Image (cartoon, rainbow, N blue to C red; front, side, top):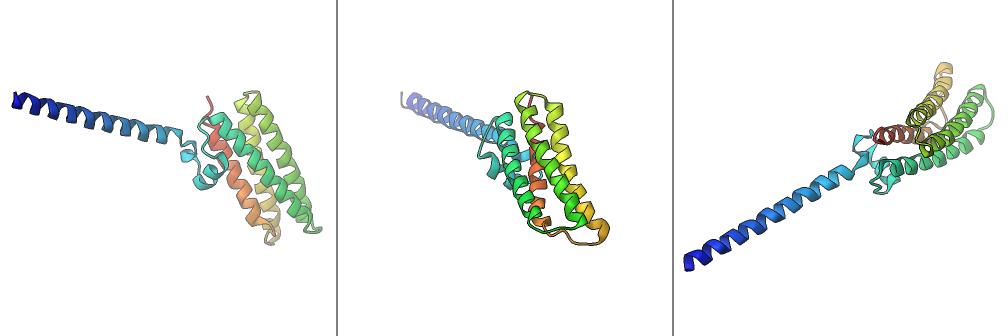
Length: 165
């Protein structure tokens, strides 16, 4: 009888340990599956913007909204810098980027992933065109640092959008 109770205790302990390991494994798998920012190039920035969202559409919406805010900030800085040929190009490109970000939100809401990706890619192109305007004249862009964040956010938006099915 003592042997039977010993085996029974061992079996229950083994079952409990196996169950805990299974639960831990499921929790780890869930935590990994929920990290939508894992595919982005700027993961910390992505996570700070998406705030733990687990739905790719919601995470993309949060990221695009943050990109709109950041791009609007870049525009305010650019407009405050005075006048130059390079700034004129940048102001046009940044205005276009804001239009594209707003368009991206509309494409997201209508579930047009192709239009969404096209608009987000165009936002990156707008910022690169602004950079190029300064590079071609040999001047350093006065707002390159803040535009860098907007470019990183646009890149993250594309990475998040790639997970929408």
